[in-house]
Amino acid sequence: MMSRRVKERVCRSIEDESDDDSMEDAKDEALTSLITHCEGKRYLFCPLKNRKGRPDRFSDDLPPDVPIDEDEAAIEQSAKEYRWLNDDEFLQKYRMSRFAFDWVLEQIEDCDVFTTVGNKKEGRPQAPVIHQLMVFLKYIGTEGSGTANKNQRNMFGIGEGTSDVYRDRVMKAIRKLKPIYYGWPDKEERKKLAKKVLKKTGFPNVVGIADGTLFPLAFEPQTEDAPDYKGRKHLYTLTVMIVCDYNRKIRFYHAGFPGSAHDMRVYRNMDLFLNPRNYFSENEFNLGDSAFSNSPYMVASFKKQHGEEMTEEHEKFNKLLSKV
Image 1 (cartoon, rainbow, N blue to C red):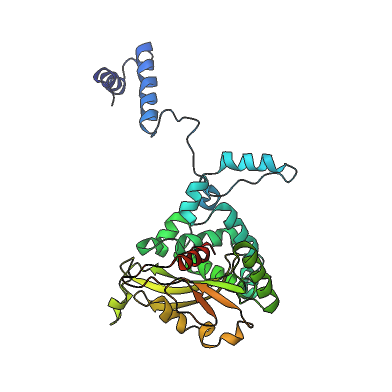
Image 2 (cartoon, helix red, strand yellow; image 1 turned 120 degrees about the vertical axis):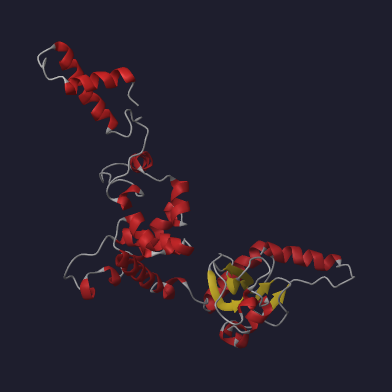
């Protein structure tokens, strides 16, 4: 706020037009101009360390373009200095590390869905694939009203309908990767996986490890059986059965059962259980915890019976199985 003395001088400079050539009036006019200029600025002094966003909101979250002839250390140092988001902020916003983000981008950027109109090199070029992936990741990493197109428009500076288009393209591109990264191992690969488990843990002929997990739902399902979706850990959930190999790669899954469904119930409805000979060779099996029942193709940990103590052999077996 201006002091009383400064205001009086400003008013005198405006009202008194008789002494335009006087030195005092010249000073008053200069002071008036300076005050007007300062009041029009939000900050008088901006520290050099303050980050300033650029008009291109996508570029704010990405490293700058660096000459190709720069070495890797110089590129990484330059990226750290000029990124708007640090690594933790990037992970929080996009639910994925920069390393994982770059890997996904590399897998999908050559997909034909990112060509122009009609998948031909005609018409207006699309936005960069990296921008479309950023919109998609922010969408699936947010729940509630944060996923609305209006919010994505405000965040990225794109059209509301553009958000839908970007997300659909990225989803199609990712789904096309399914034959490459998701599938049950063939006979030869199963042998290699079993040898690795045997070497590390002593369990022979193990193909996969099965376990159920719960996916929390943001809202109560609008169905008559909504109470069935109340899981034991969250309010409303979906139960999903996942079978992975020793390399932690998902090999089989079954989703859709409500959160109250038992793991063994879900497993019994999988083709892996119904037609095991299509997935296992002789003596091959999966491992599971005590929620599963033992069968020729599933070896589960021992259950502690009510009122009884578990034997030392059973405890040793369970401890070894838990390591897998």
